[in-house]
Length: 124
Length: 309
Image 1 (cartoon, helix red, strand yellow):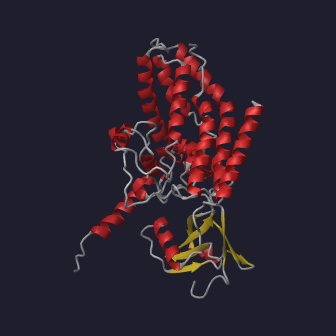
Image 2: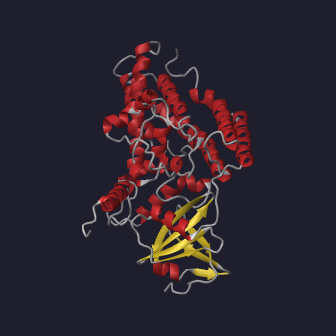
Image 3: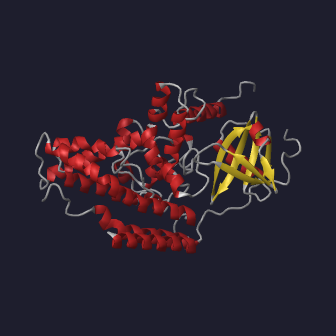
C-alpha cells in the first residue's frame, strides 16, 4: 500500500509539473472597467452599479450597489465574488495601499484589494 | 466467482489511463490542437483531492463494505454473478441509483457538503474528474446502494459496476470533445451534457445528474442541453478564493457548523442541514431555485416588448 501511495504521489507530481510546463491557464489581463462590469453582471444579475473602483493592480474590483458592496477578486485564472454591507466596506482596514475586507464566508474569508486611497473620492 | 471479493477493481486498472489521458489533454492543448485550460494550483488541488479521497476511502470504506455484506446476507433473491442478465440488470439499476445519489448530493445541503468539492474548480478538464470527495463515506451516501444488495446483487458485483461507472465518468470531464454523434448524445452522458452539469450559469444549475445514461435526466425532468449561445461558466455559485485543499474539502461542512451554531429552532436546524444548499430561515440567501427564478425574471424583462414605445 505504501508503494501504491508513493506511486500516486509521484504521478501527481508529474502531472502538476506537466501542467505547469504547458502554461495553458486562461489568459488573464488586468481588469478593465468593462470587464469588471461584465463579471459583476454575471455574478450579481440584475444589480445596478452606483460606483465601481478597479484595484490598482487590476486584480480585483469593488462596486457599490445600493447598500451592498460587490467584491470581485482574482483567484488563479478566475475570480471569486461576494457581497457585503457597504458600510462594512467603507470602514474596512486600509493600510499600505491595501484594503482588507472581511467577507465573513468560510469559502472566501478575506479579500485584499490594492487602491491608491480608501475610501476613494465620491465613495461615501 | 467470489461474491464478496471483486476479482478486479476497474478504477485501479484505469489509473494509468487517467494519467496518460491527462498528459495527452495537456499536450494537445499546449499545441493548440484542442481546447483545455490547466491552472497549476487548480490542477494540484484537484489531484490532491483525488489522492486524499483514496486515503479517506480506506478509512470509511470498511464500514460501507460491512454494511453491504450484512444487507446482502439478508437478501431477497439469489442473483448469480455469472449470469449475463444479472450484469445487464445491475448496469441499469446501479446507474439509476447513481442518478438519485447525485441528485440528492446537489439538492440537499448535508450531501452537497460532501460533493461540493468536485464542483469547486473553475476549470473543466480531466483533472477535475479526479477532484473527489473526502467526506462521502461520512455522509453515508453509500447507503443508497444497499437496496441493490438487498435485492441480491453480490457486493463484488456492486463494487465492479460502481467502478465501471466512475471510470466512464472520467472521460466526460473535458472541453476537448465538443459533441459526440447524435445517437450517443441521446442515450449516454457525454462531455457536452456534463459541462452543463458543472456550469454555474443559473440556466444550467441542478441539471444533468446522470452517471452513464443521460436518459434518467430526460425521464425525471432534469435534462438541460448545452446551448451554443450560453457558454458554461464553471465552478460553484460562490467560488472559493484560494486553492487550500482543506478549504476545498471541508468549507461547506464548516459553513453548516457555523449555521447550526446560530440556529434558533429545530426548524432552522433541519433547514440548515437538509434544506437546499443556500437555504436560510428568512430566504435572504440564494438557492439554485431562486437564482433560476431571478434569471428567468431578467430574461422575461429583456424579452418583453417595450410597452412605452
